[in-house]
Length: 513
Image (tube, rainbow, N blue to C red; front, side, top):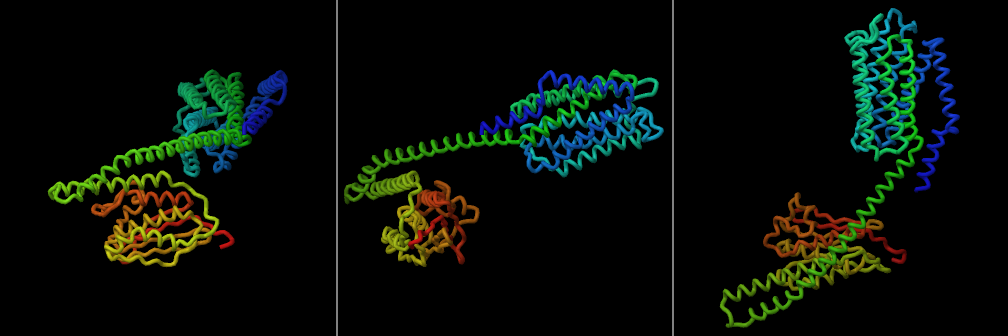
């Protein structure tokens, strides 16, 4: 991954460095000298070339940014792309209305200057907004964003032509108005604010991108300041301002389009690396927490069960001694015994929950019906005393570990017997390709719909469990086993009343079954 990032950086360097530094400096100076000579000989031609290049770059930024909106997560590019469509439109109108162009007859220098100021307000505001979005996960709707910019730009344009309510920016024979000069300072302040925001969020940006953005902001500020000094629309400061403006927009293009689209791998791999590191750290913490929790549960259960056994035994022994205690004392001893047995069951369930892990599949499919029969043997006394029946329907064979299947059915059947209020329960299942689904159905009072998902939480006991036995752990054990084998467990209402617990797990049968 580091090699890919290094290659990306090298490619970016090749694009920006097309030769020795002295050669590039000479070429830039020659280009500037040529443009200066052109501006002296034919300022309108010079102005037209510079503005057409600026408009072309602005439209390119919009085209690439808009068409890549579904691939680039950073909303900074999208905001600037849409904004530079407006900037390019106003700059093009500024070019057409420029004094001496002859495209629109009867115009003074004022409308062109107003369009220029409007365009710069759009650009500086967009840079501030875009800078605040660097590193942000805020979602923007591209359609609404484009519509908003179009509406705002249209209203701004209408205020200049035809309503002519936009403040004057240039008066023939006088020069720049105070509004125009003040606007340039306000625009410069907005640009400096954008530069500050970009710097504050520099850790979200590639180093070269940050340098290009800050350089663009700085040159744009110098461009705006130069436009506060000219008197003649064909003068030196006007020449300098247009040159700086062209270079600044090219830097925006290089910073956002080239870095975000031509060289996306560095950003992509940086984000992936950060996510992988964070995920790995989170997984390690979770695994350590699970190990500590399992160890804690095992230790606590073991340490508490050791003294609990003689306490329950002594209580049972004393309560069996007839004549040694009165009825009230014997009742208290029976309560001690019952509470002790209940705590012992809770600790047994906690130990099971802590120790349950994904075991290897059996080499051969086993009869799930046989497993259920063994489970029912453990409930034989309860079934006999309560004259309760268990109807076993068809059950598929399975390669899931027998010990875990016993846990599943022991908890589900035990839950149904305790809450079924003496009605017969049903056990069954079926196969769906490489998955099996088992169910245990009772016809008791059922579970409120609001509690059907909560019953699988550890220690949760429903509103109808006040007088029924249970630790609130059994169903959590079933849920954990189902999850280990890429499955799930859920509760649904039984037709006619009651609840049906279903558990589905991945269970591919081998070819010899």
